[in-house]
Image 1 (cartoon, helix red, strand yellow):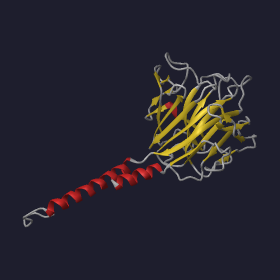
Image 2 (cartoon, helix red, strand yellow):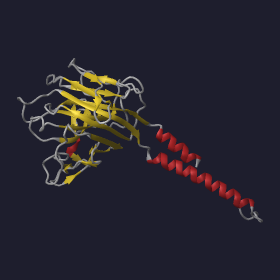
Image 3 (cartoon, helix red, strand yellow):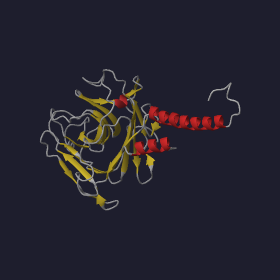
Image 4 (cartoon, rainbow, N blue to C red):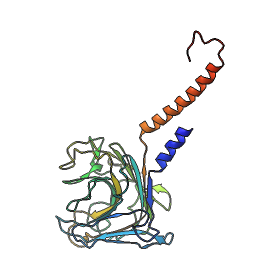
Length: 312
């Protein structure tokens, strides 16, 4: 029992959260701003209409091809985490801007000044709603030194699945998220397997979208084969790292107005939880079983009348 209690406390201690109700990103959890390229990035604390508390708004101007619009905020001072579940509420964004907005996991330190932070990202992109063409989509990216690896295109490292996550392209799927509503992004990773969902907070249900083959699903499931194919450093599997928020300019078929490549989104209720390794749980259970067996064996031997032929 003591072993099990100790294990539970250890797992619980690896949950970190912030709701920005103190009106800043310094007290409680210290967030490191990612604001490269002098693109007028801002980090402010508007009121969340849902509960009149503070939220967290991140913005950036568009920039150029070599310096695209991008902004982020990361918990770089917390311990590195391997397997994870990270969530945040996406409560508002400017739907005239085509952008990617969401969370990052296993972020590698230090944060670079010239490129995107390295790690994995779950983002919602609103390119169709913003008038940039293409489709609105929930995406998982692997961010490498050579750029972005679009992981929706790979399932188990083999199947082409580029339509996975698209809204409005499969019969029966949900409409694109609406900035007037509140949603929760849920991003999980275990080893090289990653899943992502976007949940409508008014219903508690995960939105459905194209499963990549014309049907619908409510969950992205992708893997990182740890091999070349995601850019210059695609063969690197990021095993652990830090966590945070990430937004950057979107893309689409339409590169003229009403295309708007600034970034402006608001989040609330961020949380990152470490998922214990199965081996740690197994060791805890084995230890507990050993304690119980030793106790039982001792009691049995203490009541034997003839121990000459049997050893305790």
